[in-house]
Length: 80
Image 1 (cartoon, helix red, strand yellow):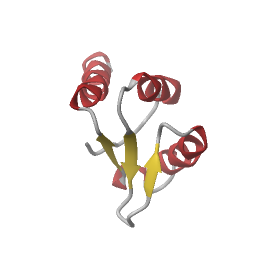
Image 2 (cartoon, rainbow, N blue to C red):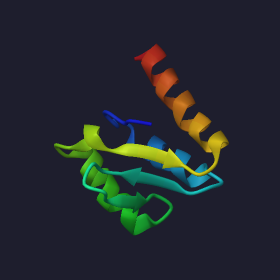
Image 3 (cartoon, one colour):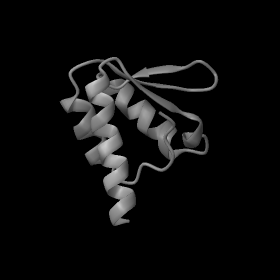
Image 4 (tube, rainbow, N blue to C red):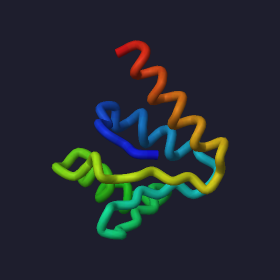
């Protein structure tokens, strides 16, 4: 799932923490950030908020975890 703007960082990280499986962010350069690791979260959030944040893709090993992110994105779009 391609990510664009992450405005609610705490909400995003709460969803990551609630996921059952692995959650990773991958860059076009091949960098992989394991979002279950707190250290990787700091680095990944800096990348998301930086100039190339729209080039990162989110992957979940558990399909039900993807739904949590989809729900968050859809709810945010609907309510602005």
